[in-house]
Image (tube, rainbow, N blue to C red; front, side):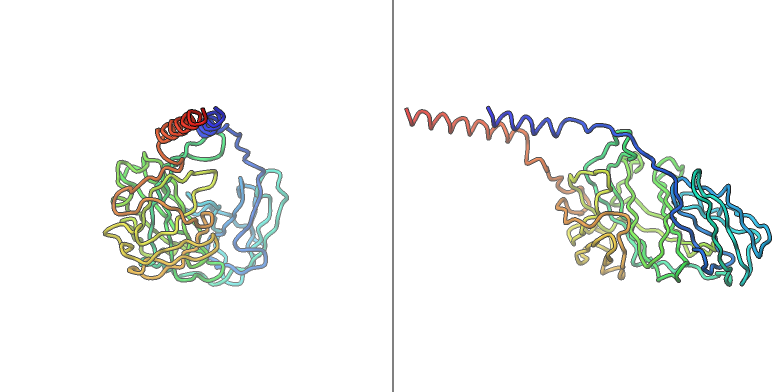
Length: 349
C-alpha cells in the first residue's frame, strides 16, 4: 500500500498543471548604444540603441552644433534594437551629439561621436557554412502569465559570415513564409557582430502551414549592414539535421542538441557528415563537412546537451518515453510484487 501511494503521488506530481505566474515586465532601461560615447562611426550608417521599453522620441541630435534629426531605419522592423539614421547625414570628421532620456524615468544621457568615412562595403555571408536544424521536442503550452509562447518544435538557424570590422555588425533577416500570405512561418532580424550566430526560433504546428519541417521549409536569408549595403539574398533548404525526443521545454528554449551523423536529413549536405556539436553558448560549432566550415557560436541557447532521441532519416524517429515506459508496465510490476509477497507468506506458514 505504501508503494502504491508513492506511485500515485509521483503520478499526480506529473499530471497536475503548473501554476500560472504573473509576467513581470521589469523596469525600462538603456543597455547600450552603437556607436558608444567617444567612438567613430560611418556618417551614412544607422545608430543602434538596445535596452528594454526604450524610445528615441525625447532624444535630440546635433551635427557640429547644428540641429539634426533621428529618422527610424527601414530595416528597424523585427529588430530587437532601435535603428535610426541621423539626417542630414554627417560627413567625415563632423561631431555628432545625442542627448536626452531613452525611457520614462530614465536618467538623461549624452553621447558624442565623430562621423567617419561612408561605409560602402556589403556584408559577406558564408552561404556554404550556413544551415538550419530541426528539434522536435515535447510541446510547450504557456500558462498565460509566464512571458512565454507556445512551442511545438525549434529551428536552430546557423548564420556564418566573414568577420566584420569592429563596430560594423551585420543584420541578418531570417524569414520563411509557407503560403506567401504572411499568415504562417516567421520573420526575425538579428544582429551579428562576429563570424557566426545561432538563431533559435520556436514554432507551433500551425506556423508550418502543413509543410514538413525536414524537407519543405526553405529559410530566406538577407544580410545588410547599418549603412543599408546588402549582400545577395540566399535560401537554406532542406534542413541539415533533425531529431525528435520528449525533452521538456522549460522557461528557456531547449539547448540545441549535439548533432550526430545519424541526425543528418537525407538529401541535405549534412547526410553522412561528421558529428556536430554546438558547444557552450559562447563556444563554436563546426559546420557540415560537405558544405564548408562554420564557427557558429550559440548565443541564443543554453549550453549544449547530449540529448538522446530519434534520428533524422526523414521521419520523426523514436519519441523516447522519459517517464519510464507504458503505464501498463507499472500494473504488471505491482501484480508481480503482490504475487511474490503471497508466495513468501504461504512458504512461512
